[in-house]
Length: 159
Image (cartoon, rainbow, N blue to C red):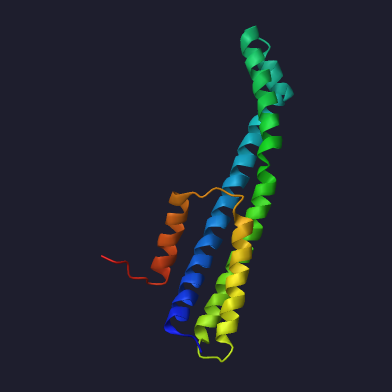
């Protein structure tokens, strides 16, 4: 059986994990979109059609397009958007699973082993949180998902 303080921790853990699950899903989509856009720009700049069209352009402009192609290629390698998207997808999954485990605990807070389950969930949250530190803390994006989750769970905001 959980104390009132522990019950609050379950509630906050549930909402926090759900917010983070949405956050990392959103971040994953951002990395995927960036990868797609830059890949298409690179393919366009590097294509034979672009070379044919630019043959009539001034030399300096052709040089700029060549440098842009090299720069986009370098950016694709350095940015590692595909890896970041995969890592964000994994974090989304892990936070989502944790949220569902908190939800399950919420439904059985009177169980004799509820306190030990809460302890395990807090350890899992700490592990996932550590893995999440490689990504930016975008307060506006996080706030967007916090507002959605709080509205979904009918959380009353203080006046």
